Length: 112
Length: 115
Image (cartoon, rainbow over the protein chains, first blue to last red):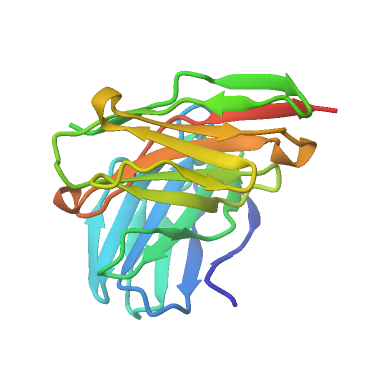
C-alpha cells in the first residue's frame, strides 16, 4: 500500500535555485496539503487543495507555489530558494467526507 | 481562533515507567475532532487516534490510553509501561468542519525513554 508518497526525500539547494517537491497519493483523496515542520513549531500549513485544479493558501504560503493538475498529485514549488526555507516538508491527503489526514514520509530540504 | 497547546516540550523517563502527555485545546466549534500523531526518529508521521467532540469515552489500545475531557478541554495521552521504542515526538492536533478540516497542531512533546 503506497498511500502518500513524496519525492525527493532529501535535497540540498543553493540559495536562489528552484525546485519542485512531488506528492502523489493513490487513495483517490480530494484534499491534499503541504506542511513544513520546523523545530519547536509543530507543523504549519503552506498550501492546500480541495480538488483537482484548485489550490488555496495556508498559514505560511510566501515563497511557495503549488499546482494540482491531476487529482493524485500535488506539487510544491520553490522558485528562488532561501535559507529560511530549510525545513522538513510533509504532504498529506484526506477524502472529502473524512477527517483523518494521512501523511507522507517527509522531505528534508536544506538551502545553503 | 483554534489553538492546541502541548506545554511539555520534552519528557524523559526510565523504561517501564508510565508517562502522560498533556494536550489542551481551544475551539468555539461544537463539532470537532482531536488527533494524536507519533513522529519517531525516522521522521514519518504516524496516526495514533482520532476522537470526536461528542464522544467522551476514554480509549485504551494496548499500552496506550487517551483521556478526553471536554470540561477542561483536554485530550491527554498516557503510555503505560513505557518502552524504548516509544521514544518519539508526539503531536496533538485539532480539526473541525467549520475550519474546512484544516489541522491545528500543537508544538509537540519529545518523549525520551531511557533503558
